[in-house]
Amino acid sequence: MNGIYWDCDGTLMDTEKSYGLAWKEHLSDFGLEISEEETRQWVGIDDRLVHSFYAKNVNLENFDKTMASLGKIIEGTLNERLMFQDAKILLEETNNRGWTSACVSASPYELLKNKLIKANIFNYFSYVIGGDQVERNKPYPDIYNKAISELQTTKNIIIEDSPPGISSGKASGSFVVAIDRGIFTKDELNKADLIVDNLSIDIIETVFNSL
Image (tube, rainbow, N blue to C red):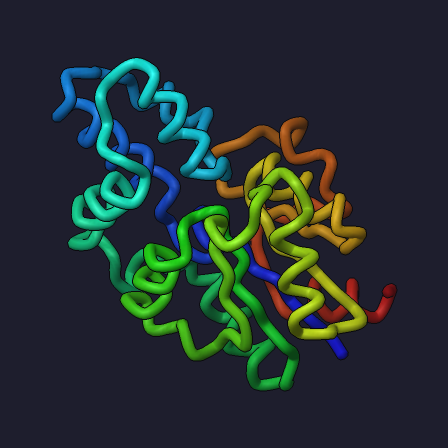
């Protein structure tokens, strides 16, 4: 059975910058000013690690309250227009072919679920898992291992846009397609099995036929 395991932020949806700016705004409320460039280092990283890092410098609320605050900041920006069109088309086409899809994100589950619902794509996925549902988040393979184990797919393609996500996917033993959204260089994405500038059903079908 074919399985496609989608990252969310930066892969399905153009939300990487939104999260970075949300962290920037939230930290500013606590008197800590950071640059947009600094937020780039956290793309694809477990929010628990981000929270732990900044909690050493300012008196942040606990993790759950911080995530709720970030969610409120970005909630107004979440809608179908944030979907990358190539991802939206591919998701629809793979669904029409009966291939199994899962959404596997480093973001906490409730935030992830809200994003997918706002984008009207939650029901495309047979399984959705967030980074707070595993002990070790990306770049470790645990989150992909858990999703694959849950769905019992035999041919697996992981679609990612960031180095931590690619490392997570490769460590799970799966074929990783990296989508270049212009945030990272090709060199930073080079651990993927395949790097593409646009997602298409032809690419995915060719990979499945090779597995």
